[in-house]
Amino acid sequence: MSPILKIIIAANLIVLTILVFVYPQLMVSPGKLIPGHIQLETDCFACHASFRGVDSERCISCHKPAEIGRLMTTGQPITKLKPLTPFHQQLIKQDCIACHSDHAGVKRISLHGHFKHDLLKIETRGQCQNCHKPPTDSLHQKIDGNCSQCHTPEHWVPTNFDHKTFFVLEGDHNTRCVTCHVRNDYSRYTCYGCHEHTQDNIRHEHIEEGIRNFDNCVECHRSGSEHDIRDGDGKRNGEEDD
Amino acid sequence: MTSLWRQHILPFSLLLGLLAVGTIAGDYLLHRLNLVWVGRYLGIPGTILIIVSLIYSLRKRKYISSGQPKSLLIFHEFSAWLGSLLVLIHAGIHFNAILPWLATTAMGVNVVSGLVGKLLLDRARRHVQGEREQFQLNGLSRTAVEHAVFWDAVTLDAMTQWRKVHIPIFIVFVVLALGHIISIFLFWGWS
Image (cartoon, rainbow over all chains, first blue to last red; front, side, top):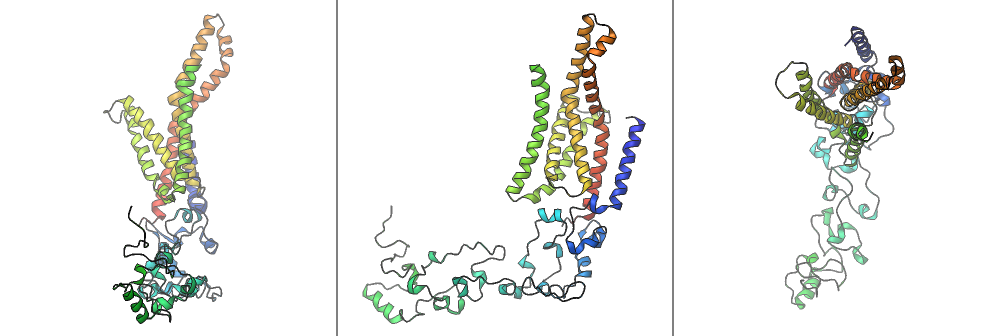
């Protein structure tokens, strides 16, 4: 390699090195910061600790957990609450990077970016409605709390719950959940919550047919239709094994 | 002409084309399978493969004495090509910081210059030499021969420059890649 070429290469690399230190936001930053952090663009170590990545302590020096969701870093109150209730006060530890990423390029490829419900204190985890707006469909309007019986913290939707697999809600049975699920406890049900089915008349009708085991109604009745009655194996009456 | 196409230009285009197609396909698959985060880490095996490919360079310059140069050259070509593919997928089609993109560009130039050296240069040199000999046999003067092969000679000269670029651009690539790696270690949280 000729000495002139070596000098040209060295000079170029020195210029690039200088540019890295003068314009880190252009040379090494993985994309723009969020608008609120724009003034930190040239000061990488405002958020990053050397060889350790983003340091939550540095975030907290501006964003005080007690004030997050209530006051802005300027001290002014937040008027538009999103989510409905401040929850950073309910976190078991301050691990900002577990949910937040700032550079546009990192956001795109980040594994993070989704709130981890595990970071909430145990007593707060069940209070979904504090942050989530309850669905307004007819099924959810009848339900009060106990979201976790159908939904998981990892995926709110889709839920694989389908009431038809247990019992078809049609006709008189399309009623309020608490009629069958007392105290909104969806792990249990009763068929004696309405005037139609009393323990005495159900007992009488089944004994008359020679049926003595009638504690678990949905084992044979998957709908209100008297023609849709199954045996203990879930087969409709009249159905035969292949 | 058929031989020139089959033995030199086709493999050159194929290896370069495969690199481009492999990059786009890899990036597409990572996006499709929701595994974009994997691309972030492909820079590591890519860099290791490129470093390992340098065994041939050490052998060629007699820093080490063991190993068949021909086998090491094949390994150098394969390992550097595959390493470059992984680094290109790692880069993705995302333009953020300038430094890693300069490093990626330097790596691309390095790959092309390596392929030119491997597949085109030797053949072109023999082609121009053959032309010169043919014209001399036909009784053309030295000046007339040089005039007749002028554009071929210029092309050959340009290709020789590509070959000469291989080592300097590699040094540029190493320094830029090192800058990118240091910045990642400095700012990234690995936990």
